[in-house]
Amino acid sequence: MGKINLFEITLNNLEEVYYPEQHVQGVLTVESREPIKITAIRAVCHGKAFVHWTKQRMRGPGVTQYRNIRHYSATEKYMEQAVLLYGKGNKETCYLPVGRHSYPFQFQLPSVIPSSFEGDHGYIRFWVKGTIEKNWRTYHVTKLPFTVISPLDLNKIPAANVSYLVIYKLPPRGRRTDDGKLTQMRDNGQLSRTRLHVKSVEQSN
Image (tube, rainbow, N blue to C red; front, side, top):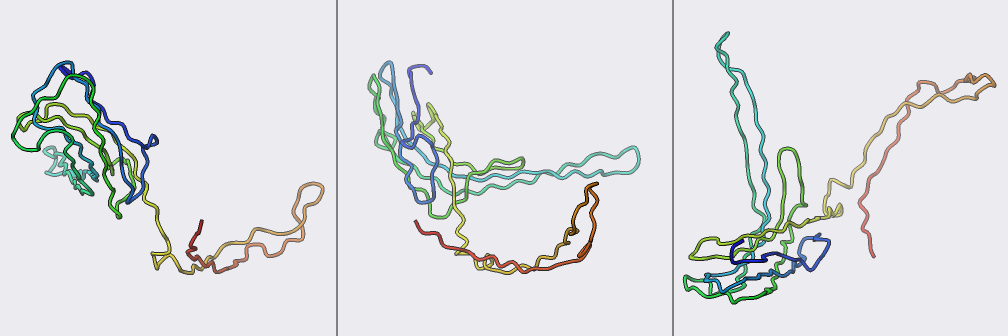
């Protein structure tokens, strides 16, 4: 890493799991072997979703057929909060002294964000990124991902309070003889129905 011995992010929550509206608190630690001329040290909290898939189709007649592949992708940004930890935040340069320096930071997650997700065709990720900038260019970068769990409150979803009609086939009823055969069959093959009422329940601690 050149003049930098250590550049890492540590979160106060060792499990690195958060809920909406909670504060993501941590420390960005830098250790240098000699003074470094820099512009700024920043911490940025990101939240983003990305999805990508393809569709394939054969085109052309006969032996001249070829495979046509179309790519589809989209992104959605949920948050991008930045905080200046060292420097003046403008073009003016400064020197990072020799030794180890710790810079605390704090970000508040939005009230409405999805849970973290990893899939074959996309993801929802949250992470904290630390940067050392020099002459408006990124000199060093470090990243630390964390997990967001966004609970689903069924009390706020009207469609969750509904009734469902369930039809199922009754199993044969009777008694078994010593040889294992089922006798005195009744209700065999009949259909029964019941109505299940699914209602959201508010849980109180």
